[in-house]
Length: 148
Image (cartoon, rainbow, N blue to C red; front, side):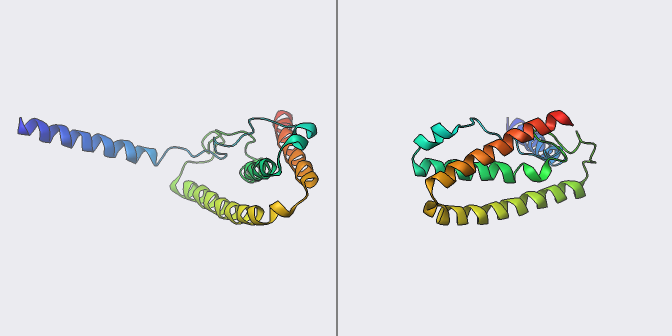
């Protein structure tokens, strides 16, 4: 009985270790799967929103653009991996992409801290115009992908 428990524990340990080891070599997605707009808004709808709602929507749009625009030469939609694009899935390439993600996250964190501090002082009409501009930019990315 004791031998069965030891054997089962050892087997479980080896299987777990092997599954984690394999995940390191999985091709990385260029654009995160979490990127996307659930809903586009029109001016009338945005005009009816409270300023706090507009601030959060504005910040959400900035996140989407920062996580998408630098990569449009590769892809415009989430889920495209390095391997899909013919980029070798090497340790160096994965590390380079990880470095890019870290740099983007640091930039985004600084930008969002600034936005959360300063944005409440902006005019509501400017927020509405900026959100419409950002959403139009995201729509143009979908058009861009159709012309390639």
